[in-house]
Image 1 (cartoon, rainbow, N blue to C red):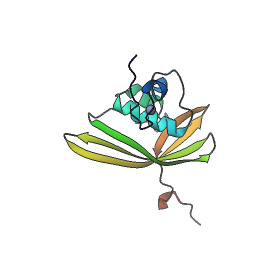
Image 2: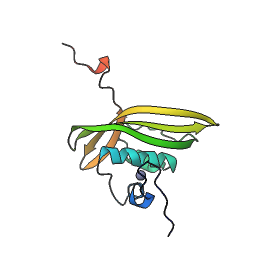
Image 3: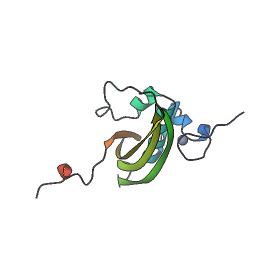
Image 4: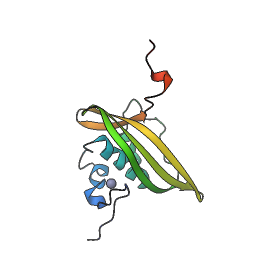
Length: 134
Ligand SMILES: [Zn+2]
């Protein structure tokens, strides 16, 4: 059987990396694994998985995929705020639209509930709006 390298930059086979998550055979065990599987879902245009892995209260009701060519994912850093509860992943994703290259850099917030990780939204730990007033 011909194997395919996963889209998400691990150099693993797709079948041993993101595919089981995208096919619903397993749950991504960490926020970083979920982030990778969501990137692979964008590449394979798996809208159902993007909705499945998005925290329901944060997922846009009109979520749709814009046609583009994904070039690659790099996870720069990641960590946990609370083990098995909330975590962040800092990544860069690159894509092309109409021959023009674009770059998304985001630090994303993830949270887990009932043993499942979900993407929440961009995380802004240094944003003054999120700071406590003294
Ligand atoms: Zn993967």
